[in-house]
Length: 233
Image (cartoon, rainbow, N blue to C red):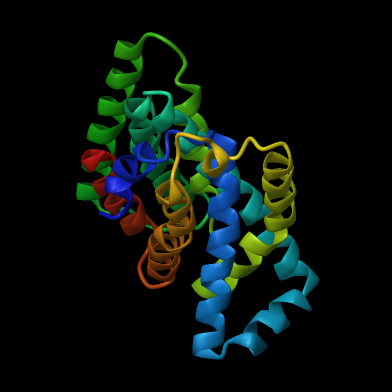
């Protein structure tokens, strides 16, 4: 439900470029996660992950995947292609269910199979009606379907944000140095900066809920429940 109303929020940030918005999302998400880590005293868990090369490598890949997902989504919304973005999240559950069945060997009940056939037919119809290859939709679907940290939600998101934060900070610093940041524009006020800072909790809360939820229910159920967001969009 939270993801479903995201376009309304990102529309308010249209004065900033897509890459700048993602830079702020990464930086302020990391700040939000570190604050939660401190409040819940989870430093030991964070240190354990950072000392485990296998987990650190996997979370680095997850960080890159979710960053690409964020960038494509914001670009879609801010270029009046929200419908394409929504289509991506209609395709994503099908990819998730396919991974659950083919890779994790989860069994699907007959009623699940019927619903998957109907959903696949609906997606195919939308693609045909669009008349072109929906690259935004496909990029969103596959980048998020492959995303799935194998640690607790908060620790995972903290590490994922930390590994890409240097790139985000470098880009934002370059924009500020050149005087091209959205909040430096003469026609902008403190409101745009406040909205960019809020990108941290706005990003972290639904992603933490999603990551926590995927550890508690079968992946096939996760896939079908993900139709809520694109329907709202």
